[in-house]
Image (cartoon, rainbow, N blue to C red; front, side, top):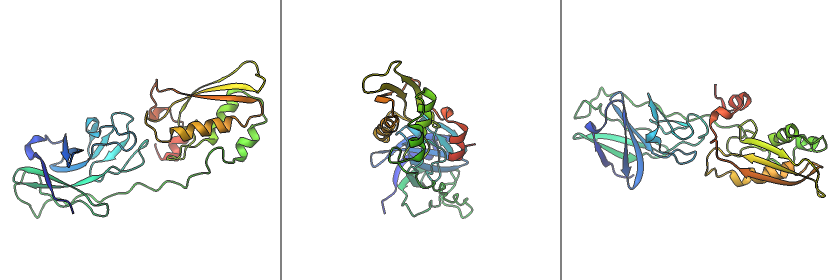
Length: 261
């Protein structure tokens, strides 16, 4: 197991407070809440945003970029668009200093004295139990692979509404929610006159973050699903990041599926 590293003095943080420190060259967000210190990687697992710059509320930190929330005691992801936990650290207070050590995946937090004592106290509060976010439902079949719904729509009269309905077959591979209900489709344009090889469809799409790893798959699935329509020729997908995506763009159906109330 790694050794503890001194990263700050106890007096460096107000209560409540937060501070950016380093452990073995990695940025770590250090927090002090209710006299107890906690530490997690300063990296939002959604798009790498700096958590220490976010809003701290009790034991929850919100990423300043897209609002994903994490438990500062365990690193657990509490709200989308983040679905993976960030790493947590054991904290030890000694001789007025704050010491951190990367927590093993199977271990719980170590005991630490309250910030007002110089030596460990038997009466120190036990750390909160580690919680694990609920497992996601099994992923549906990839968009475009099959899908009776998309097949049934492919012969109907081509329109923007129909294209959006077809695009509900395209699912985010991490969230398992379709891109329409996620609010990723900004605009759909259909060429007014059919070309020799079919009408051109242009789709303005955004991503939950500029570096979304699912981007290439979502673009390919979008082209494949829309391209199944009998009157469609070329499908152009344009990635638009302005305005940036926020969870407010989701439909109520998406919120219900993700357990956001």
